[in-house]
Length: 130
Image (cartoon, rainbow, N blue to C red):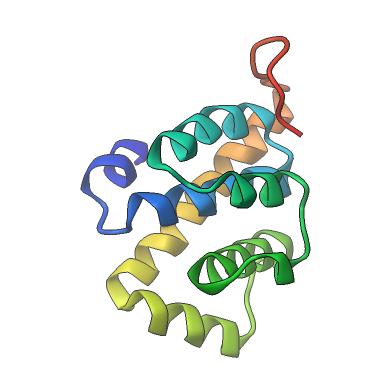
């Protein structure tokens, strides 16, 4: 599944990494955060976005597409559902195929985050996560 999302998905790489970081932070999955912060940096995702996710900044601190991705991710992870207006906005922004992939991606990382927490998988020592 992870190889699909990294190599074959139609989701833009930056969207994928923002959503993964938002999910990892909500789930407090430090190892996933560590792995994907590196990928986000390599993709050129702005440090302000990464730091905002790390700090669980209010949604108002994000703008544009990033704001929608973070709001959708946080809501789905916290509530296991999203209100219809948010569902519709996300689907409209991404289109149906990418929207379905985004939901699948989040389901995958919600599972990974839960397993990481349950088995206390930690990043290497001295690595800053949150």
